[in-house]
Length: 93
Image (cartoon, rainbow, N blue to C red):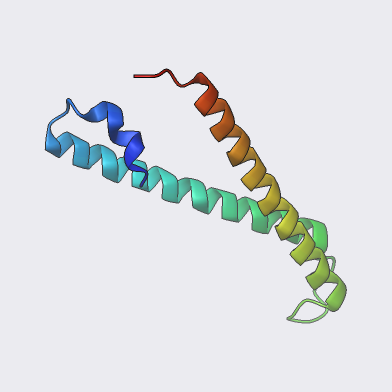
């Protein structure tokens, strides 16, 4: 967990800080799983056309690889842009 997220919680008792830390960790895990599931669903829907065999054929495998790369690059760019915007709106202490 990013410790800067707890910066405004200094006035809370230790028990509440710990509870908030656990809650933030759980939210981050949930968001990671949600992103992973979205990636799998989107790439599977776009790339897999039939169930002729138990493994992907070469075309499907290439499609899934490209899809995953695009999805991850997009997610990283959105995260970077969000951080840029967040830093721009941060007020100095």
